[in-house]
Structure formats: C-alpha cells, structure tokens
Image (tube, rainbow over the protein chains, first blue to last red):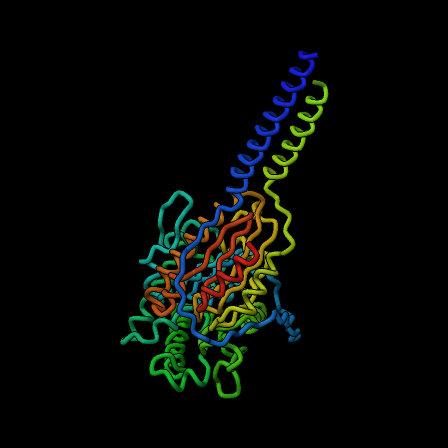
Length: 262
Length: 156
C-alpha cells in the first residue's frame, strides 16, 4: 500500500517536472523566434514636422490618346535603348514602365559628370562612370536629355563642347547606334518668371545651341516641348510641383511623343 | 505511468506545433502593403507629388530580387524632392534583412546625390524612416518623420 502511494507521488512529481520543462522550452522557443520576428532596424529620426501640404495624386492612368500617327511604336521598341539624363529622366524611368530599357538617370547629372562621377557600382564593388559602364552594354539607340542643371554655367560654349564629347564617346563605343538628343524641357511660367537661371529664356538659348550641335553632329533632335508646352510656351502649371520636374501624367505624354518620333 | 506518457506526448505535440508555426515565419497579418502605403500617403505631409511606380519597375528601380517579394508597392516624388514611400513584404527574416541593407544603401546614395543638387533635401534623407519587422520592410522619406514612424509602427 505504501509502495503504491510512493509510486503515485513519484509519478506526480515526474509529471510536474515534465510540465515545468515543457513550459520552459516553450518560453525559450517563444523568446528565440519571437525575438527574430521583432527584429526592428531603424534609421532613427528626430522630427521637425512642418505642416507642408500633402499633394497626393491618385494614379490617373490616362491611356495615351491615339494621335493617329502611323509610325508609333510600342514600349518594346526601347528594349535596346539607353536613356541618359538627370532627375527628369528618372521620372520617365519610374513612371512610364519601360522595364526592359537601360536608364542612366541620376539626380544632378551634367554633361561633364557623365565622364567623371562614379555613379555606377558593379556587383563586384567596382565603381564606374556612366560612360565607362555604357561601354560594357549592348544597345542600338541612345536618348539623351541633359542641360537643365547646366543653365547656370557661364559659358554655353563649354556646355556644348562637353555635350559634343558625349556624342563622340557614344559613337566610339557603338558607331551604329542611333542617337537622339532631346530638348531641355521648359519650366512653368511661374518658375520662369521668378528664377534668374532656371527660366525659359535660358532654356531656349541652350536649346538653340543643342540644335546647332545636332545638325553639326548629324544626330536627331527631339523637341519634347512640342508635346508638353502650353499656350504660353511654358510647362503647364499642373505638370509640376516645383515648376521643373514632371509628374506622372506628363512623363507619360513625354513617352508618347518618343513613341511617335522615331 | 501510462497517463504520464499520454500527457507528456500531448504536451510535446503542442510544443512541436508551436515551434512549427513560429519557425514558418509567415505570421498571418490582416493588412497589406497597400494599407501601409495608403495611410502614409494620406496622413504624412509631403511637399512633392507622390505617384505610384509601375509594379514591374519596382524590383528594377530598387535593385531587388523579385523572388524575395510576396507583395510590394512604391511611390516616388517627381525629382523635385527626395521624398518616397516603399513597402515590401517578404518570406523570411533573411530576405527582410537583405532588403533592409539595399534600402540603407539607397538612402546613402540619395544623400550623396542630393547633397550637391538640393542640400535642403538632405535633412529629410537624414530623417528617413526605415523599419524592418515581421517580414515587412518600409521606407518613408518625408517632411514628417514622426508621423511616418507612428503610422508604420501601428502596423508592424
């Protein structure tokens, strides 16, 4: 009788120990896995929140209006194209869905930094300039839009000289590539009237020099302003928040123009 | 003794089930990447017009392996500012950390680009909110980082 009682007591103790061990294991597991799930990594911030109005544009997918042009191409036309440009070209890249196209679109890119600034980091860690990286690519067409960041340069002759160097460098990489030079896009009327550098008078002046260069170099000039400008020969005010950079709707108009002008 | 083994077996099975659920890494959540992005868009102050990036372009634009991604969404400013929102939902902690590193590098690159081009934007980049948690990675560069953090931590 005593043995049975002792045995029951021992069984209860074993059961108790097993339960405690199991509970401890569960807590441990929860800690390990729960800890992993709660891994939080942050770039810390200290806010000075100004109440600047938020402008959120819902995607207004204005499918391109068919302008009845026979030569209009589709997106795949640009799959062997390379686009070179600054933050405006970045908008074209992000908003128009040219997913098979190579873009060298860098904020602040200029006609000289394309040769000097190492924007490109290769998978092996090597840093290259845009022109160095372009030399490693297969392409048949190149679209260039540069100039808005150079509007403050003292000598437009230096601008054109550097721009010409780009054309020469592309030809030395691929002499058969079709090179399209795009006009500098106008700024809005408000911006133009309020800025001593970034105004449409300067843009016209630079564009006329670009046209001369294109004629001399025998490359195609694309007047992007013809599809974007308003009745005042300015970028429409609804096209841009800062008067310079195009929103999605206008980037799509820009792409439509390119499709119609090959 | 038999009773003890049965109880122990049941408990062990329970432990295995708990472990399985935990290690699967797929916590069921009742929100989507779009829920987070939409709330950021609607409640955080942005100077710029933020437009959605074409979904095919997002992995390319961010240089992210598409196979990591369960779902994703991104909104970019026009270039007038450095502002942007992106939300990625991935399969596991390893992918989460890879995307976190990619976005950290993106912030660094952006800081470098904007420091010469638009120095005023650098403070926004310095205050970028980047949170990786529960298989989500969210980046928000805005003028109101405290609000952005508040929104993101509400979900994650």
